[in-house]
Amino acid sequence: MNWRNWILLLALVPVQYHLRAQDADLLSLLDDQEVTEYATAAFKTNRVINLHSLESTAGGVLDFKINHRFGFINGGAYEFFGLDNAMMRLGFDYGITDRLTAGIGRSSFQKAFDGFLKYKILRQSSGKKVMPVTLAMVAAGSLNSVKWADPTRENYFSSRLFYTYQLIVGRKFSDRLSLQLSPTVVHRNLVATRAEKNDVLALGAAGRVKLTNRLAINAEYIYVLPNQLGPDYHNSLSLGIDIETGGHVFQLHFTNSTSMIEKGFITETVGQWQKGGIHFGFNVSRVFTIVSPSRHKE
Amino acid sequence: MLFTGILFVTTGMAQKYFTKDGKISFYSDTPMEKIEANNTKAVSVYDVSTGQLEFAALIKAFQFEKALMQEHFNENYLESNTYPKATFKGKVTEPGAVDFGKDGKYQVQVAGELTIHGVTKQVSTPATFQVTNGHISGSASFNIEVEEYGIKIPSIVREKIAKEVKIDVQSDYLPMQEKS
Image (cartoon, rainbow over all chains, first blue to last red; front, side, top):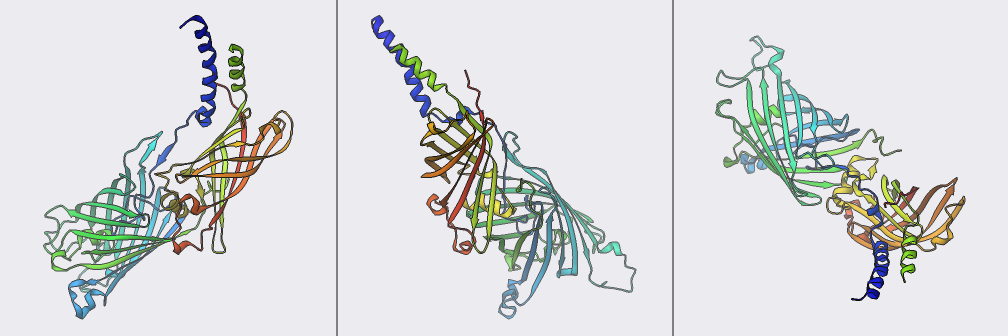
């Protein structure tokens, strides 16, 4: 190459650079401010089936729950495979903030009143702040209001009370898959026999697989550590689907647990899957926005 | 030849304007339900010399009145995990008509490619640049057909979500410090 070509080449370089710069992404001129992105909607609602999911009710939102469990399927044709009977729980969950939820409920089973507080300690996030898991805790209490079985003996009000403390650690692995573990302790003031423990330790495991945007499969299993319950009680296993339609989430499922509150489905599950001791049931969740988030309005 | 090169570089260095808190709102209006969402974190760059105009907005930054709507918007409709951003890349067709040094209201036409939900479509809309005491703001309002962007609305909520949604864009531009 002689000197003339060199000059020509040098002269062309800026022109080409200019042409390329014009095609380039103008927005790339801005410094990319990295934002923290929180994982959302790991589960369609704040319950997997019976267990609390790692999701909370959004701040300012009231979630009205109507839960049913029909009788045991092994009741046969005479009991219309359980549909002749139904237990229900009505509940209201309210999101005090995006991280703090309070709920109350009333179950027909054992005429139980219940209440809980749930707080999200850590939120799964990516981007600026990385947090691999969501961690929540639930404190729940319930009151069995059935008349005393034996009114002649000395009965204490405290015998009606049950407490549950639960941690939930979970992760939305992908759009499709979310998994969680729930170490739990249930405290019962009164138990039936000396062999049964007042404090029962259990570990719940639950997951969901999203099939389409509006349909998901859920499963949960609660392993109660051995030698804590009487021989008639079994671990809770529930399988179901979530169907979402606008403001409702319908959860249809099969479960061997009759109760829909923690102390019940963890420590008092009598159904056995292999013997047809299975309830068909559903949860309906309907949300109402009570307080609009202030961030919406400027 | 050498001179032409230098000249080109000089024009390339001309003024650009940007914003990091542009406001994008959309409205879906049906007799059953009015839906409104606001995003106040849109970024935009406008190159005065070429008329090039670009916008980008994070889908997750749209705020709704109802948390559930916001969840459905992200999860079911815009699928923001797969398509996190909406972008616009286009041009002001007559950039010379606007004098950012002089107060006034300038009507322009903006045309370009709008990408939402991974689908890119040509859009064209009238827009306004307002210059007040050297303060520059741009605004535009246009409608898009939701279905054109591959966003499926199931029949069960068909009555609640408009086929055509209105999009308002409003941003205050600041001069960009050129990187040397």
